[in-house]
Length: 205
Length: 205
Image (cartoon, rainbow over all chains, first blue to last red; front, top):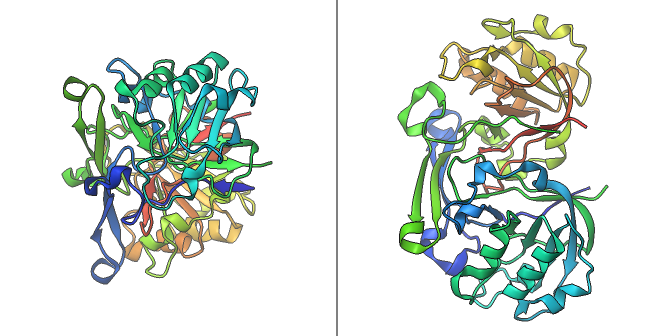
């Protein structure tokens, strides 16, 4: 059973801070009416919808998106339900889940139910990021369009990306139950980019 | 073991007929120098590099790329070596492979070795497409930037897409041996598009 946990990429989608320049633009260069077939191109920000951040997003010497180890993106993962959290995910919120080395953890929060961009979206704070690093996770996914907000100097991003821990943002987990799944979330092989949209799916055997 | 069979998306990549407008353009909107982090956007044709065609590419009433059944893109596949073929793949070339119902077949041809666009790339002709339809395949992948050329009215495309048979174009199979693999080749969920670049991989258990 495949669960599609990707946001639809279209002109009505939720974008960060509702900025107009972040809305993707699909343009048809050939059409069925004129050309008997069609072709299109897109203008697309790398942080649109469901996407993977590469270390280079925050670290000048970090890996770019085409350099990410794909073994860490075709892997078992665990969805944990944090729907009760209102503001931010901290170390204390995570301790009860007994997170182990090499796990890939996806946070299901109230963000998944928000069709519109919520400037006060639930995020992972510095203490939570430090705790996950200590646990030895290989990746974190969130249903917020960002994994953090309201922290100076992007601390959560830097703790995770500085240790080559994958960050997937913009997941759609509203129909997903807690549990273990196979995750697939492969970035496009865009040379030199700091992120890429992905088609993310979960598989339940 | 994961084999990456995707072309790199960059300004020096091979594009169809070497048309300048088909070269992807990655632009940074924030930079490490000015912003202490970086962000980019891309202008990208949907048929760039390794990509999946949707029926809507050739058929006005066909499915768009966001409507493709993902079960058919996380699946067993078979790579067959057709490196000896100079011009086109026909029914006669395929009969010896005893292709069965529900197979996903990838053609490894001399196209994989061409770093530059070759206007005379090896393609699948109408007789080959009709034969594959009769076999009952669920998908075809090719290492050419197109699955056909030099045929009136896009017959190969229409035979395959008209029967919801997936077409992946632009694979890089030069390092891949004949055999059975797990294929993953998921399109971005771009609403209404006729195709999408994919990060395609093979897994050998």
